Length: 329
Image 1 (cartoon, rainbow, N blue to C red):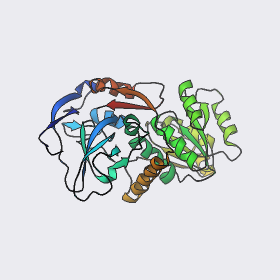
Image 2 (image 1 turned 180 degrees about the vertical axis):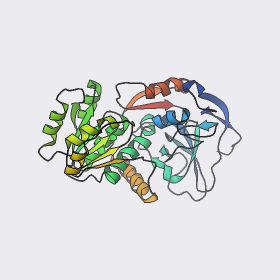
Image 3 (image 1 turned 120 degrees about the horizontal axis):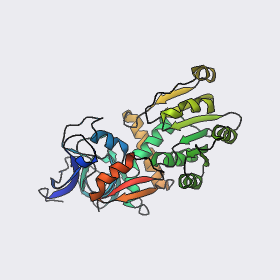
Image 4 (image 1 turned 135 degrees about the vertical axis):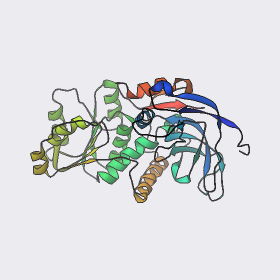
């Protein structure tokens, strides 16, 4: 696109606050890609809780800020030094870390390592739901959790965006997977993905997990809620591992059992990886897309005028069953 003086529509905020601080600006200049960069026309954005934390000021950024790390669209322009992408390519975007110029905009400038070729049978809405959820699941299972063939894996919050990818990744590694959710829609999704579905609301939850896991117990737990860690310690077998990815809490853990079982409990962030770890993560998503081994589930799509409602829905208690998406077509 030669005319970089043209403008785009974007969602911004100038100072932290509630969802009503988000504003739609139709006159933001379209960014110009530099050498080795790619300009993408964004058609859909994957919404993540971290964007709410930034908007609320929990993660400080000086305004004005265009939120967003995930998206999908079409390559509009390729500059000198880029060989893996061409104008017209359908791509998914994962910008690796929040910045002041994110994907909540009709155009986004990316480095090639932020882009992934989107299969023709995958919609932009699905592609927008790949980045943060897949990379979070993959980094925890493959890198931090060192999950291997034959492991018994339990995924808490398994019906959400991260959890559903975690099931697919663990299945591909040859693991026995137990998925946990609290509602019928989510439990059905978990079963469809090939995992054993168990409700955390079941009064016999721990007993049912232990029966499903077998005599050696669970090897690895991907944990979305810190308050579950005491129960995780009970469920895990010898040398078991927990990767905790969210929801701070103040819980009492039986450290006698942690010592006796020689457990590992680790907090992780997908953005805090080394360049080599990111290379492994990117290769994992590239391979999954090429092989067609993942199928992103979209729960709800919002128009740009509904962005405040979308942010409220991200944080509201709900029966999670996939990803929330912002449409920018």
